[in-house]
Each structure stands twice: as C-alpha cells, then as structure tokens.
Length: 130
Image (tube, rainbow, N blue to C red; front, side, top):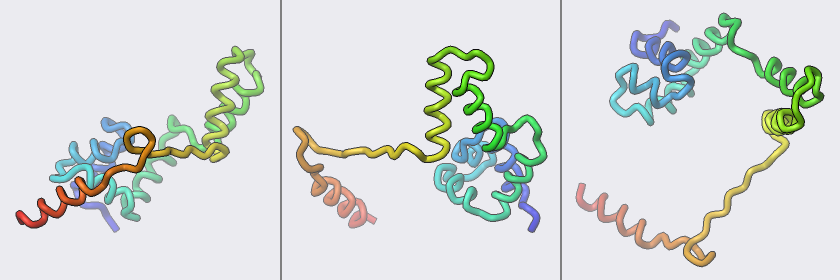
C-alpha cells in the first residue's frame, strides 16, 4: 500500500532530520500529537517496510552485523586500539546481544513504598471535571 503524503514525510524526517526520533519526525511531518503519533506510526507495517527499504537502499547505514563485526574487531584489538576502546567495544557488543539485563528499582522516601494515593486522587479529580 502506498503511503499518504503525511506518512511519507514522517518516514523522510525519521530517516533524516529527526535522526531516528519518532516524536520529532511526527512533529516535523505535521501531526497534532507527535509523541503518540510517532510511537503509533512505527508500529504500522507500511511505515516499517518503508523505513527498512530506506535502510537497505542506503549503503552508508550500518547493519547490525556490520556493527557487531566492527565492535568485535575493535574489542580484539585488530587495529591496535587502546584498552579503553576495546573495553567500550566489548560493552556495546554485549548490549547488542542482550547479555546485560538492566533492572531499575523504584522506591519512595527512605526506601519505602511509593505513595500512589495522591496520584490516584489527582487522576480521579481530572476525570470528574470532564
């Protein structure tokens, strides 16, 4: 299916000026709620296909394999890299292969639970005003 003019502009901005930032691309393309639109647009099959086609057609965009090959070569010191560069390359390679699991702990004051009753009251009062 062909993309509408607005969606075509979204893809152009996403791949260009917005640098892969969907919210910024949606804003530049003229969407009213760019944050929501950008996220939603990236789940659209036609848009994903258009983005993938642009990536395949552009030889200056590195593929995942290209990046992993580069990080591996750097990590192994193939071109005489400094140890700090080798360490950073090993970290990026591990992240790209989901070796690390990042966990975030959310706590309230003094390590206690997060107080949610105030937020719930605020949300309920906003709904009641509508």
